[in-house]
Amino acid sequence: MLKLNYSGFFLEAGTDEAGRGCLSGPVVAAAVILPKNFENELLNDSKQLTEKEREKLRLFIEKTALAYAVSFVYQQEVDQVNVLQASIMGMHRSIDELSITPEFIIVDGNKFKPYKNVPYQTIVKGDAKFMSIAAASILAKTYRDEYMKKIHQEFPQYNWQQNKGYPTKQHREAIKQFGVTPHHRKTFKLLPDQLKFNF
Image (cartoon, rainbow, N blue to C red; front, side, top):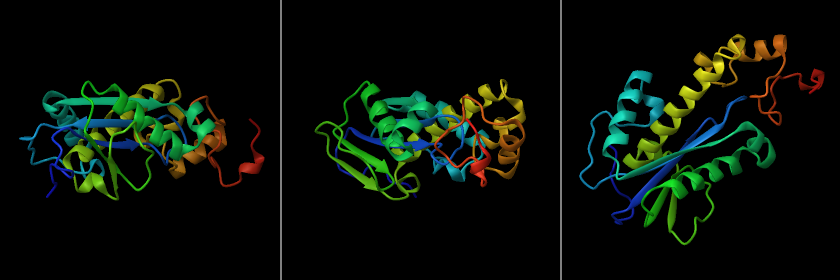
């Protein structure tokens, strides 16, 4: 059962990201502040849900949250700063964009950098423990999936509408066969035999 609040502060923001382990596309982060009477039976860590359930929840979260924001850190930036920094950067940007300043921040995972003077707590597997982090994970995942489907139209041979840029066998085969696109992260090990690659 997910808990609604960690800190006791009313304006507690949960934040999470999606797409860290992908070979292509952006890291997408989200931040969400939920009202104190928020409840939803279906809400869970986005990885435990079907695509249909996530889409349904996205609409519900956007309608009922006190504030939410989603931000994209594109592959060029991921290559510049590394994926962990890109994730933290994305979470900070999302918090920046919230229409309400949070009094406390709870973060999925174990890495974060202080955001202004707002106290925070990192929580490992937080998306399976706290509603606002689960909500942020759903927004990050659905917005990212939508974006990957869009760029799939441009490069259908990589099948991003299905693999979403993750390193599936099929995705690696396509990289081997067709090379890399502007959407690929150049600092990632795109192929096991990376040495044969010339950018």
